[in-house]
Length: 177
View 1 (cartoon, rainbow, N blue to C red):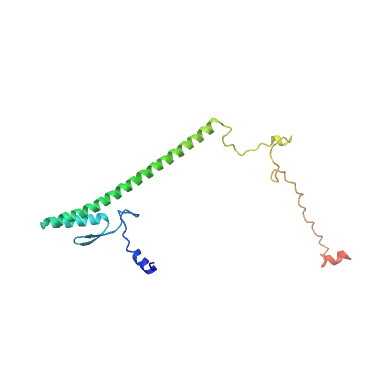
View 2 (view 1 turned 90 degrees about the horizontal axis):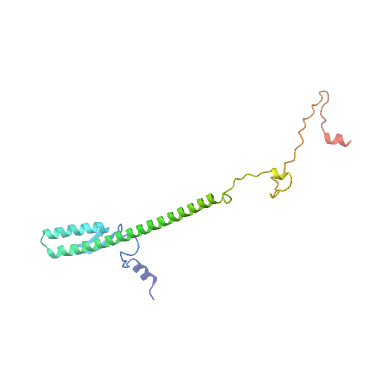
């Protein structure tokens, strides 16, 4: 049984394929070429290997020239495959969007045809005629809001106090006597 320490150490040392997850176009790679490591995005690595191939060609080193060309070709293929996958995804998404839009357009057209063909199914305004309420033939449900409000009695004005009388100091004790 492996210890958790060895598992955590090996976790970072996994050999990940460039085709698994992530955006390959913007991903940074470490390429181990004949001249050492080359680090960068696929486009940067291609440019670096092409430059190294030109330098090898100028120095008449055909083996190094071919080697650098092969490394550049590998990353060119990797990049073009990623581009093809992205284009395929984009086309698929555009196709799905067009299908969704066509479905929405069909539903909208069907709704308009239904509304135009049968005016009884068309949305009706919220207007209620109360002319049939007088004879009691209405199918409406009586609610407190539909009941007529009771009229309030008019407010009475307070009586003016005579100037010669003074108000009693304790009204409750005088009324009891």
